[in-house]
Length: 86
Image (tube, rainbow, N blue to C red):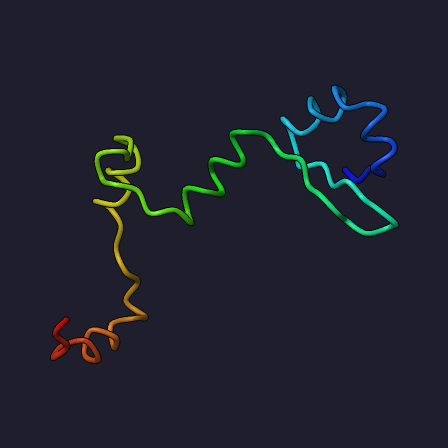
């Protein structure tokens, strides 16, 4: 959904509700200026970009990490790192 900044100012509550389902692009002079999104979506976006202590990870995330595997198409990278020491 795209709305002008004027529409947004006149209907803040409506667009806050709409942002619970999909991002709302707020335009200024015809260009996207700001994007309103739900707190849940914001948290999802942050999780991928913020380092967190392992103690803060939920059980589902820890299980997903434990079950993950690098696809075989990247096997050659093991050879590149074979003799590497930190």
